[in-house]
Image 1 (tube, rainbow, N blue to C red):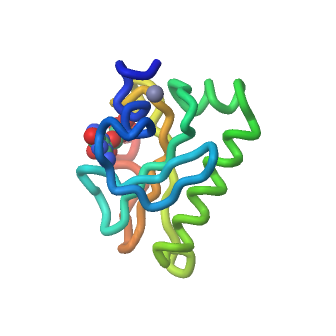
Image 2 (cartoon, protein in one colour; image 1 turned 90 degrees about the vertical axis):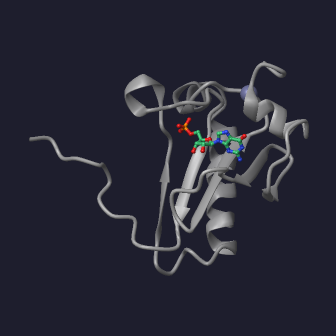
Length: 119
Ligand code: 5GP
Ligand code: ZN
């Protein structure tokens, strides 16, 4: 991917972001439109479109994304009260950026998992 992908460009340093943690293979940065007091995106530096492609293509890298998310949760003081970690995937999942990213959300009660229940 590269220049066509927003998060590849953040990984490359071409677009600024507030980076909170970096490893050899992952990057964590604050969401530009936070939906909770803490809202951090965790990505693999290598481009995968979504979590299913990542999990099937590189299970070890999937684990590194989770480990980085857990470390950020610890750094941000979220582990005591809890947090939410989610991967929006595809059209029904509401995915807008097609470079896999975990949303780490916390810092306040987050409410129901979904905006509405099934009737
Ligand atoms: P998705 O809907 O794909 O799961 O989430 C994409 C997320 O990326 C959204 O929460 C959105 O606010 C965030 N986002 C979009 N553009 C940028 C940007 O340029 N910088 C940062 N830090 N976050 C962005
Ligand atoms: Zn990308």
